Image (cartoon, rainbow, N blue to C red; front, side, top):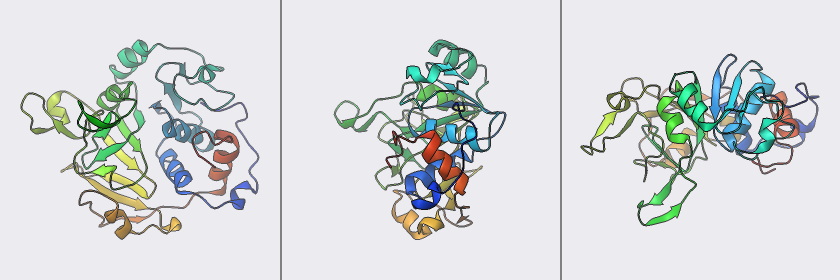
Length: 276
């Protein structure tokens, strides 16, 4: 989904301002995407991270936006996945039924890239409400296609700010199922595969580091932390609402000048999502 200028001049802008935690998170998330993958992106930071990957290291990655475009080359960054700017130079404008019914259900989507308000240790994602569903403290935009994407993609990558109120023992509402979720028939936690789902969360990228999931227990653990921003493993545990494993965690490679330059001057120069 590259923009019109696929080869921006890499210069001094990346040197002029220190890397923010928001930029650090987007760069780390973009590195998890690869050439040849078909990636279904959600609104906001997933769209930014996928566009960055397309420019820097994965030009042959296909980006699909839920309700508007297939592998487009927008003139400017769309502000959501239904923004008409996203259709510029797209070879095809699929409907939501075609994306969800054909691509997802036929296992054609390699990666679902999502954001949310809460995540728990099994990768369950909440973008519906805080508190009780019937009497919420705050209600969000809801699922859109996020439930379908989490259920039917080959794997899921989650991106979100790292705070204790967001990384919780149990999400207030399961919008997008993770590795273990509640069977509505019994109320017990069951493996997603018992409920007929494939795929599952692969990584959670936050403003503090990259978390992955144990292949046996499916519980989240810290894989990398952003030592270049001054993040410590102790701080990560302190800002996580459940006991998260940190043994084996390593400092993440810092951003390259090219990644920051492209992010700031080509992908989101207006600061629509990056808030410069």
